[in-house]
Image 1 (cartoon, rainbow, N blue to C red):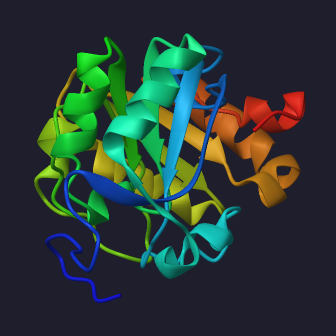
Image 2 (spheres, one colour):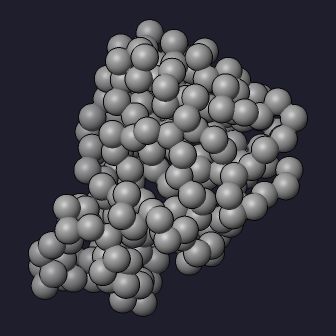
Amino acid sequence: MSTSQDQVSGPGLSSFALPIMEHFYTLQGEGAYSGSAAYFIRTAGCDVGCVWCDVKESWDAEKHPIIPVKDLALRAADSGAKIAVITGGEPAMYPLDGLCDALREQGLRTHIETSGAYALSGSWHWICFSPKKFKKPNPGIYSQAHELKVVVYNRHDFKWAEEHAAQVKPHCKLYLQPEWSRAEEMMPSIVEYIKANPRWNISLQTHKFMNIP
């Protein structure tokens, strides 16, 4: 599947059908809406290449089915959820207008989790921007983000986080999240950093503690 800095297109792909790895009803585990019930839709396909990614099986879109967005929206609505979270992979690789429209027609809030590597399409109630060092963010994401969530792998990531925080809007919520495999090692440094810089908050992958998707 070819990729570009714009969006991916290919046989069977459009704003009306997308490659999907999985979709399920659970609790949001991270960031500003942590603890909230949400229907997750995980798109397949990603070229960002995070070495510590915990869903590498999502990277190859051709291994996963293409599903009509109306079917996804109906499943989300039938679950009873009020929030639909679009994640990946990297969902912004694809045109997302159709999925957003279908979800909104069912009365759901539309949330997205993105690395910002691609220009964002669709209409969103909440945009979580989680930049990665492996692929430079599209400049347009900074003014759109409601939430900046930076994964902390080592102490150098604090400076990197501040570089991104300096570019988002004042209303954007700021989160530092320990990378899961390094959480025990990095947690003391994150706690001390937030105490010294209280505009930041901590984000924990609470779904992993709860052993839920």
